[in-house]
Length: 341
Length: 193
Image (cartoon, rainbow over all chains, first blue to last red):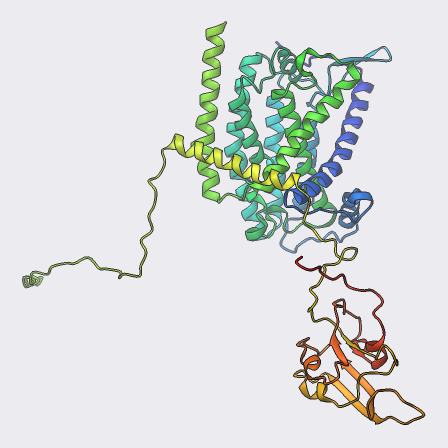
């Protein structure tokens, strides 16, 4: 038995390099769209317009934001720990992009006679890969907060650490139900197993638990205690400015996209269409993007609705409500799968 | 040798009465804590209710007034920047330079210098006219007392409220500026609006 994870489909090296570049580029293009969508939708949820001054309908607002950030001074506090301070945003961004690689945008397609899988990589340990990078992403926050040498950053980072650890457990357990049902860890395998019925129907509870835990994983409202602007000024990224802050910002929104992609893949049937419609292969990525945008919309909707939780509420919710529910879900699924087979 | 502490004297029988907070203190009634399942369900239900509330805002039109393009309409009696008036038929100024407005002004922002009308140079309808009439709008509190004090309705409060400037001296409005028709009119609210 090989030590390395088996890769579902082997491709030429140049295809893999090309795919890596394309995925990074697509991610890079999607983030400003999500950024703008968030600000516009938040506005509409609060009965106002949101940004509408820069470009038509405010479409160039993210460009203006990023330009502003990049032209700013790279400020570094005296108390910060040099190397790590510069490294931390990088860790955040790298892990976010790496996690983006396993989201399948379609099955293996023949492009000019070359079979190409429309995903970065289809590892046989899909969700584990995801959680591994989720765990590394936590270093981005933790090191960023600690190396800033500021008490607000440190408090934010500590909260982030506790939160990520607590909610990753529930997230994993919620995904376990799907893995048991699909009997595969490969992301494309999970999608193909949903050909009959999307897992949101039999795994509705798992989906809700996963979504809730994902809100915490991505540090978004109502679990955005890591940044908690009102009490921590900005949390782990208080001392960051300019390009480094932009990297954190980018990673945050890319994480939202990654989670949307995972929910799409795991619960919403990935590139599959309902009612047995089988469109041509080139439509698949658009189906995935459409489903991802729905989940992203939900993220923004929830952010516009729910107030931030108190820290003890967050912890007790994670451990006392979400974890037992996720365990129960996995248990019941396991029993049912065994009973019906 | 340690001294044995003396036995405390037997305390007289004290009847402890519950302290009454008085009539004006309201007791907060709390519902019994819900069971975990019920509490979880209630939280879930209320979350959904909240989501529906925000979605209701999402589908309706924003209430934003996009200010520089779109101005808030003012009420007819809104007290904005002052206006000086002329008689419509003869074109003579209504102001006779009596300085009553300056006397009424609590912020002391009006300066009037009167001069005699002559047959060759007839400016106002009365005996005298205001050769200098200045309002320092950076001091004005827009109370409208000048309007009330004026015996000839020569000065009234207009509807303009866009009065920012880069220099304080630019906010001293002279007679010519106050007599001129404002370039941009402020929208007026309709009856019953």
